[in-house]
Image 1 (tube, rainbow, N blue to C red):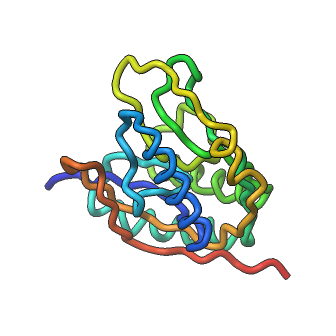
Image 2 (cartoon, rainbow, N blue to C red):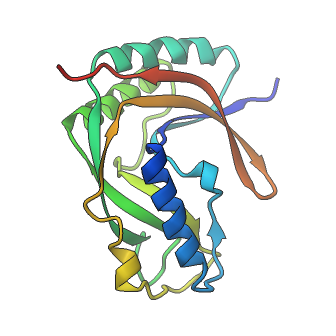
Image 3 (cartoon, rainbow, N blue to C red):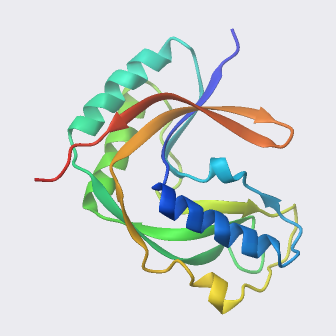
Length: 188
């Protein structure tokens, strides 16, 4: 049986999603040759799992439900545009963000759930970001107009749910299918 490619992620609320798409459109109009993320694919990855068996899905659901029950809804605050890993040799263009302690606790809980089920530990530290585009190999940096680079800075919104997604690689980019959704408790 073909393994599934799975990850936990949170979509921004509709108004923020539309603002990210509008920013992506304005960046696209600058004419840079980048591989743009499909608008429906813009999300915050909380934990990439990689290849998993169909039989892992139920165990992941149970562990994710426990992680969701252990934290209340949190807040994300957007920053500016980032050329990562370095501005001179970027591979990705993203909007950075900051997470409050509840979001960090959720991410940590999902990491622990993945480890308990035998997934390899995440090698990179968690960074809040929303990827807008990827650079072709050996790209040089691009100029980011200040009015675009800081357009969403200070935008705050709740993270009150997350999803277990299945990713299918296709010619035009990955296509995501929600396998399960997990609401977080409201703060009292």
